[in-house]
Length: 121
Image (cartoon, rainbow, N blue to C red):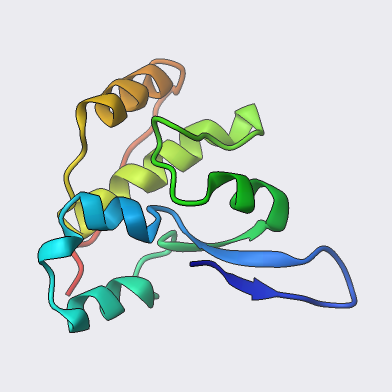
């Protein structure tokens, strides 16, 4: 579930998990302890695990995986896919066939992209 921030000085933002909780659950988090799930939910140890996003696109994304949803801004797809892969690798989460197919499709349009990550503690 996203955190919602409202300000009087600009657009309202959500704090979004690159890989939504439901997707993480389906990809291996269901086997984690409650403590590990809390670590995932509050992961401030990776630069792109949690991101501030506008409300509209985040609400549209919901719990969808990368095969079901991509950012509406075409110039954001490579960054989103890279962050998705880094988060999955960081937390040792699996990817299903549809997800891998979508990632390959996106990657074909991304030049000189390197995925860097640090394993979660």
